[in-house]
Amino acid sequence: MRNTPYNPLDFQPEEHPGFDRELHIRRTIHVMEHALTPKQHRLVRAYYFEGKSLPAIAREMGINRISAWRLLKRAEGRMRRYLQY
Image (tube, rainbow, N blue to C red; front, side):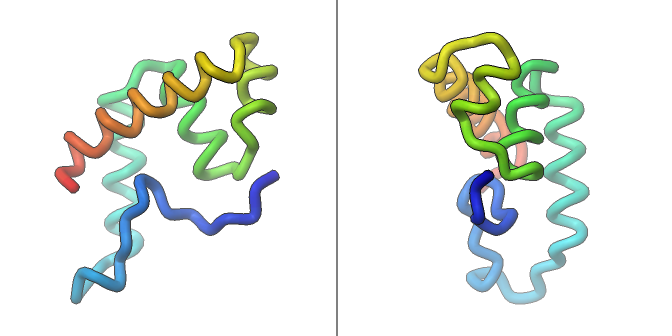
């Protein structure tokens, strides 16, 4: 497991006065549930929220590591567009 803190999409809250972490997490989960494919959702949840490594997720999903990385990058791009940052 990775030892990095939750920080989807490299968002830096200290750069935004009045940042509401709970609201950010709720919005992120909403976007994950409604804008991502089920496969993307599963991968993003495992990577960012459960702290699993990409190779471990790829094994669990039955795909190769490169495919998992590409799927993650597409999901991150979609989430950035929906969250607008």
